[in-house]
Length: 186
Ligand SMILES: [Zn+2]
Image (cartoon, rainbow, N blue to C red; front, side):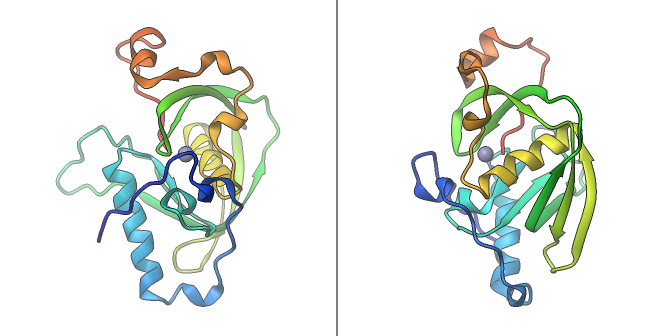
């Protein structure tokens, strides 16, 4: 496995809609390698999600984990990792929920972002098998953040009040209590 380099805001890949993955790609070892590399790159960057455009690839793929990357894993415990290909999201009704987010492609900034409280996720897993499930809360936030990356959207575009925008150091100093975890980075 190898680490991929994460592109930052200003790179055109982050602003272009990604293309669907063809059905014949799933059997390609290079495709499976890419998914493994995306997992490794996400965990190395202490992220909880990573979309293909963030490594400069315009393909409808993202990976995520429900595990806090700052916590040490037990020896025999593997973080639960998910890959979604050609996903579609259907938000459930309900009031939008605001919480802090950061992005591996906008690494220094944090902001309050409204997201749907729950979404239905449909798409394919890394082997091309159909996926259809419902996610809510923290995971729904990660999935919406990553899905946006496949459409050239970043969390800054979703913010409704830019006054909550902060540099990470200042966010930790002034905008959160000491025992609060940092926002998810995706
Ligand atoms: Zn992001």
